[in-house]
Length: 403
Image (cartoon, rainbow, N blue to C red; front, side, top):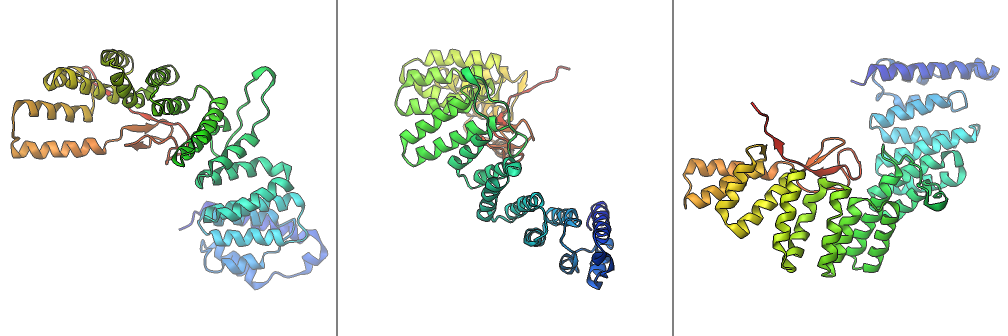
């Protein structure tokens, strides 16, 4: 059943619109309402809007006095998922000849939102671009919806251009741009570097190294301290086999956002190995884990100990470390190594328990969104849950509470 409060609000809007329309002119005062109008109103009051809603929409006059009623009705229909009816309501408003330009622009914007909800992104894009040229007052809001469309369609060059158009020119002498709200709760200043990074990724996939470098340079101009920008610069240096530069870049991550240190480890391990500096890598892992305890750093150090000191020492390290900090993936690794070193064949019941723990560790999230709590096995720069950029980070270990 539909929310009765929403229908009560809509009924009040209908009643007010009708009263204003009735007082507007003698002709309107004398003209009786059709039976279809009252029948549709009856269905609204009975919380059964689907039965004769189309008749009700057709019977409601379109004029300045009933404009807000139509807008409220269209909003309610879109919220309920009845997008096609919402489109009809807003199209009726745009077809009216006696609606003020500002009201037409409002209906224009709402129709674009209907198309976005219906997945008709091309139509919405055309409407919003037209609105930008027709109404400076609605241009900012139209640009925000266009950014949303370009994100969905992964048209990162257009998304970056539209986001840039929302920002004012930088102040003289390198002044910082003020924050400007984007399509969600985040500011355009946060979105823009990620758009350029996504464009860089696209260019790399297409084999356009120069285009990738230009996109990454644009991202760095917007936010040189963005950890994603640093990680991508390190990737380019690594692809060029410039291992010293890769290490130098990846060491900057600790000062930008130490939560992302685990993301630096695969490249760092290869670079230190290629340069014959495995001991330096071991020192880096130990120092980082002491300051920033995370599962990724713990497992990387355990693997390093196993490679150079044997599985028994690696298992001993994990056992000692997890006296204070617990990790499901670490526990599984510890038991696996201990059993591998102690016996050749597992008892059947223990083998089943180990398989269950393996499945749990493989399904447990390694990354968590700090805004909405979304968890995943892989790093996403764009959270599928709350649609925030850069809010997902590697998870740390769980500290054991003292008794």
